[in-house]
Length: 255
Length: 122
Image (cartoon, rainbow over all chains, first blue to last red; front, side, top):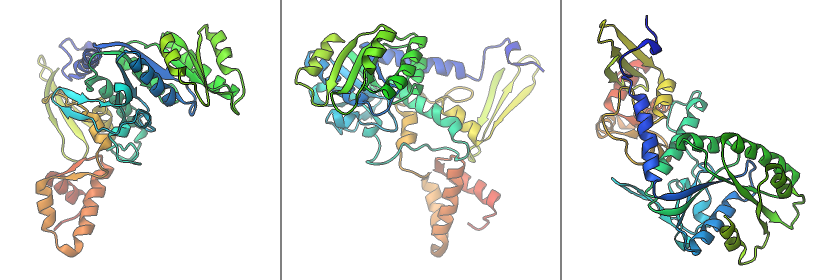
């Protein structure tokens, strides 16, 4: 019996070629995007989506066409923050993204699911954990490869807590995108965010900087400064509970 | 190895054959519903695609209303089931499809379910 690596004819299962075609489709669709920035934290509840949406609007207001890919498939909130509930329309050319405040393009599961409906998976119920991860990665791939992003200066990718989706993003892109990190001041956030930043560095991402959110309230600590020192990356902004009008424009200018 | 054929019996499983052009030996690959789902989760088809990938092909399976859909032929067949048991029969077929990850109930799926579950006459 011959085994796989002893075969001399081309692989007729066709899987490798199809995977390559998927990657090529993503690359072609993102060809008009000047840069992609992954907004990550590793910690939930620090305000990644809040920061992403306001940063996107600031960039757009500054004349830089911007899009947001809501990669938090299970807890999507970007469309509400961008003031849109426009259902994306699909045709042979692809899926047209929704357009939110200040002309920011966005795609999100929140635009595709019924209100309150969880992300559902159609498949065998037994051991569904085996293939659910692959399905979510496929959804991320389709968000990048099937949406008509057009010409953008910046495409922000709002990542969910943890590093799994970031890892999937790197695998699909074939490279590690630059990362903007969000934290709150507390030591607990520092410790969780540190893990994510280390993962990003190990994967090869450029750390663009840190945004410290919810500053000046009940959350005490110096997480941003500690992480900035540890990873030699700047603190780009400290967002108070009630941001000043120029807060986001200042962050956008520094990004 | 040359790809031979691919069959989806309608019960969530997959069967594919590959033939060596030199020795003629044929190898079959059989996958259970979980394995079939794992491969399809990658957005690929064993042996190559016959139809180009459509936009949001995978996402549509996640955002569609819950439960399998019924083909027109399957709905007609269900319509021939006596009214007083139709609801129960429909649920049996729907549960059968859901457990196997079948997204559309067709007459072929109904035939397979009838044979496996002993639903003669339904």
